[in-house]
Image (cartoon, rainbow, N blue to C red; front, top):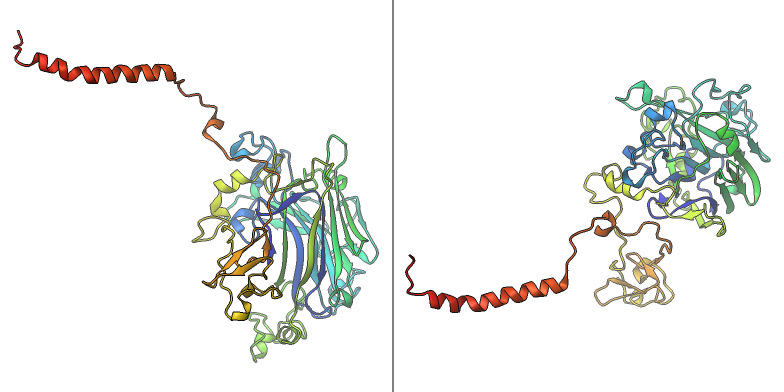
Length: 463
């Protein structure tokens, strides 16, 4: 998994990547994804996501008051958070890809004009629509789903998944909530898995002053795929909006029996154990056809290939920002005050400091100072770093990381300055330097006179 939590986030703009998908188009089982998540939640750290994911509601509602951890009904301004502004971590899926052999209008896709392989483009948001919802596998009836959704060619509403009902063990029912997956599926072809394609998502922020509710748009190779109009989200009346949170990038490939595997276990297969290395029928029968052969093929191992990831923003739009803790949506102090939610046992802090050099290098003399070899053992080559006599990388000024393979980037915009004692607006006593020196002179004079006075007093008897 590649992720940029609390390191690189952006609010509004365009994110784009050139990618070749892993695996084979007609073999189900892999779950490659390219997505954004609000910085208030750290992926796989469940404590940070409960009642935070995928909330995007800034206002006070009866549901948010109990179900949203940081809601618009709160008036206190702890951790730098603004009073009366709800916070959360909505999710934007540039894609979640499902390969497989089941085509449109067959099997689980009987009612859908898009079948495997497909990519799902989604805006996952809470609070969701609590009543009169469409059922999974069925087309929504009048008034059951969001307005303002537009799909492109070979794209259709994702009727297989409309969202989740969220209940956490030990919570009263008042804290339960629906999260919605506002999603369209786009038909993919074999060449999406054999060549690179450009995947792009445009994120326009809501703007009350200009009177618009923002939007999300998806493209493949500059061809339009899907749009979510923010007005349709707002008009649902539950308090949700297009995300205004700083969001970070995640790129990963998962394996799940609920994604691309057979929808029903085969005959005489209980689907309790999955082991491609086993020779037992009951331990391999639950996999998709040819999945284990694909995974064990050492000459063509499934690989998620990424050429680049880029983020573009409009320098003339003050709403668009780079940073994980912005003036409008700060996160730094909240994360610092709740580090237990963002760490695992044994961690001293959520993120480890970036190593600058010191990685092991030069196991062979030829790699000690190689100009052409950019491998870790060569410290990225002479333009990035060099291998010392102690066989440890030492990076040049523009590069960092244990083996000098990463550009030494920085954020030129600092939204939050280091806190000082003076920031508490406490005024201490005023010191007069003239008075101080006068006092010290008097004390010094008394110290000199005291021995003389004591000698004169010797032999005197008190009356």
